[in-house]
Length: 126
Image: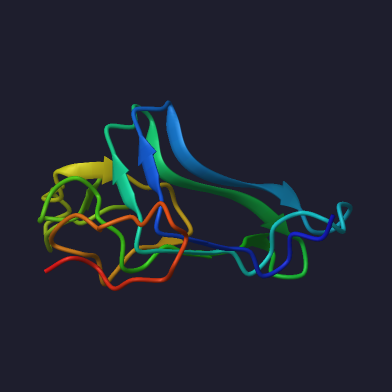
């Protein structure tokens, strides 16, 4: 199974230890996630992280960034934690689920997403 270019959208990642995690080492696992995109999801109530990136790419000299833009993090202020939304002084001001290093979360959604069980792509509910 090839997981390069995986797109995760219109889901509810609710009440887990980690909502969504991208894991692997590109150097020795040809099927690990690379180019992962996570958009228009409700990522809420997860204990450790809403989204965590653990994809290592030796050619980059570090972890690969996961594109998790345009998600609802459980609060209009955005994701929390050291790598979430912080002010210029470094104080955490995001009150939603936290994100790990190497997660691109900005811009984020200010309200929940209408996830469609029929599987059709729909815009976020306004």
